[in-house]
Amino acid sequence: MTISIYSSSVPVLSRKLSALLAILNKAEAYAAERKFDANVFVQERLAPDMHPLKFQITSVADHAKFIAARLSGKTPPVWKDDEQTFADLKARIQKAIDYLATFTPEDLADGATRPVVTRIRGEEKTITGEEYFLTRALPNFYFHLTTAYALLRKGGVPIGKGDFLA
Amino acid sequence: MTISIYSSSVPVLSRKLSALLAILNKAEAYAAERKFDANVFVQERLAPDMHPLKFQITSVADHAKFIAARLSGKTPPVWKDDEQTFADLKARIQKAIDYLATFTPEDLADGATRPVVTRIRGEEKTITGEEYFLTRALPNFYFHLTTAYALLRKGGVPIGKGDFLA
Image (tube, rainbow over all chains, first blue to last red; front, side):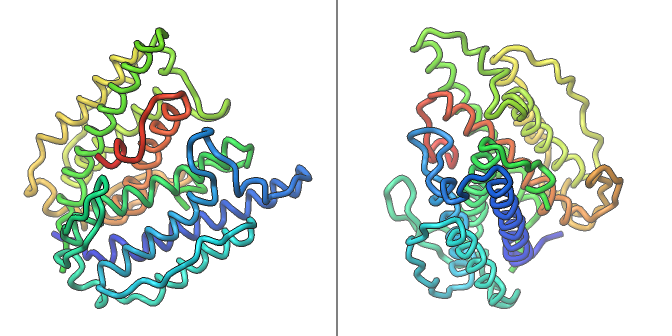
């Protein structure tokens, strides 16, 4: 019994991005209720030497974009990392959701065996789409998604596991 | 092109658990170097109303255990959540690695279509193994794995993305 690389990636990534968008909306509502500017979250960090929320969000969006593009052999669009406001971060997530929606199962049909060039600890390596997806891109996607969640959760936003799994 | 549900789960989970074990070893070394008791990490939390490290670790181990068991129709072993020390947490991770090693690709051959009973927002629901794995168990596994990482990272342990992706 096997599963298609499309069904393990595009719909799952899209669902998680939508959950993240809902979490960002809750963060905005929380800021409004507590009367602080939601934009302060953009540069917020979990630890002083960790990346800020902006980086976590752009990374989540980029991993989703690269997964779909690399597994289908398409050239991914270049997105400038010029987000400055909380609204910009939401737009970046939406852009990734919209991009994923352009892919069909057929686009990713050869995804598992497609050679993917990636950088691992600074060195360029060619690995299969399956290895890239399972051991690099998906863990990275969840890493930044969870870090964004934890950062907002620690910042007081009333969210729970149900929001993450939505 | 498809990928087997075994190769998307057991070896990936096992690799991530080994990475987590290496991260816990780094945390122990850091505590020794700074001359504090590594056991204080066991009850450490990212936010006052989040679960402590102990819960994050036992959850990571349990999600790995349940994924292998449920996708293969085996009865998972019951592990008491009686960990008290940092060494206990490492042993729990090792127990999950050892359990995963007992599974073969054949064991999970019918995993994608196997009915899995799970609780979603308090209600019992039967879903397919594929849906359970992709939309519930794997996100949950990465959620607790990343939260454990972030908690130790925020606690000063010198770890980075390379340790997470190892």
